[in-house]
Image (cartoon, rainbow, N blue to C red; front, side):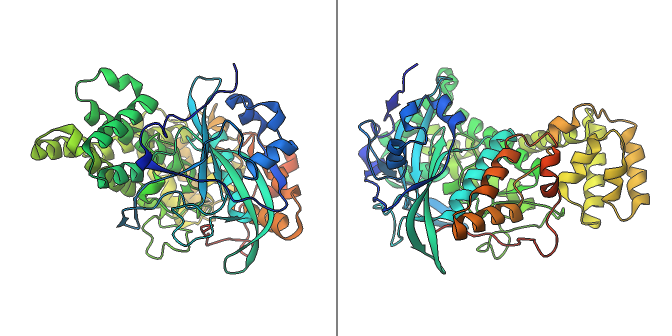
Length: 475
């Protein structure tokens, strides 16, 4: 199949984007190029980590197949509504039809100022680019719906934040960049025909089977809600904390997007948060399901004019739908957690999981290892995690009577992108131009379910002196 660039979203309405070109950089250099993803997208090999590809993915050249544009959207940021946000440092280059016949966006991130930059420089430091490249690709290998990284390029220029930092550009791939915040932006334009066209576009692109349904837009709400419930359950089952679940960071496709202040929890504590700007813990680990519901309610508000001409009926129908979110989420969550301990009967699995999590929290046990070691042929590694081995042994005996361990090493990863390892990769790349740690992390995270002796030194959680307790956005 040939490389097939298209621009269906720009064809929808000129109100939804701003044409814009990337700001050229002085001395681009490759950090990484994802050949596996390039094959799926049918990217011509002449762009695979070549000089021509470097010029395109650094923003220095606009190929004939690209129509670069910054996308408009609104959003609730920490519950405060901003009617116009938009891509302040990102440009959609094109859409492509991949070899699986699905449509994907290709976007530059960190490519310079846009009409939506709101005073920002539109650039990205190298650190957030390396973080997003590593974590998004790790999430893909962990079977979590996610945007992906096609390329990362160092710009050869400095970006001023608290200090001057080396700059970089990420090429991000997504099923789309349509967000709850995009729908909020369209609603704010107060154009019913555009709102309907936008919702129809979302259905055509992501939920085409719904076109045969009588209650089309209510079903769209239900399907987006279902995708988000499933996604957040996946996050929770891995100890992943997104860090900034604003409505402009929730996709309508159900993919994880925007890996700014994200992190994986180590010592289990439901109140864990990492984001420096999340002072009150709004987006802490245990709050993620409730915030997912809150965001879905904001999406429901955008669809009310389409659900029913009678506002009261529309509200009643939307409310009835979103009231099922918690049950839907819990169904997905307990399915994931039951798989993690190898117990199929949910009536048995749920109390076992709850007891295990309580033990983990009380004894500050690493989330990933606590579940990984349950798949071992012998219990020694799991037991050694718990200082109070007697309480663990009681739980273990109860669990062992019901568990099937045969697939647990295919369910519970050995490796996650731990914060201190990402920081090592960032510091080496940013300070010394050394990509050795970055490349080694890529190899480790490419097969997260298989323990390998070559990565023994990166298997353990961070020591106290290595721990990274705060993460930052790149803006």
